[in-house]
Image 1 (spheres, one colour):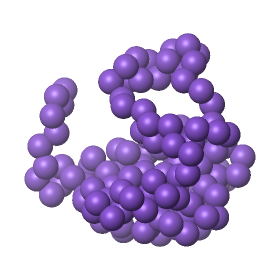
Image 2 (tube, rainbow, N blue to C red):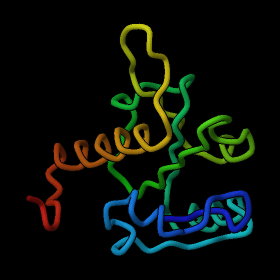
Image 3 (cartoon, rainbow, N blue to C red):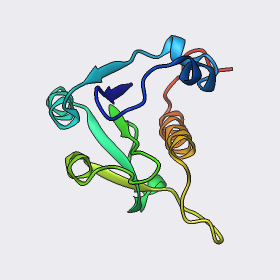
Length: 129
């Protein structure tokens, strides 16, 4: 997980509790410039997808490669600068009167779609239960 050094919540005890222990198994890097870090990772072969209501439906995007998932904040979403650096902009299809999800739910749904697509292509998932 890559988070900005500034303007992001710290890794507090409350964050650890909310993660249900996942934070203990997730490497976290704090960086000063997200766009620069994204460029370095893209140069190494990674693609980036961000969540945005105006994007292509998530299941129409090939998410099986080396993917970095960008999730914005609750109020403003992904910044325009970071969005422009993304290779794909994915939307989560919604039904009824609900037009958006909170950031953690959107992250979970998109992460699930990434894994679903990889399994459909024959990928083996380590430690699958």
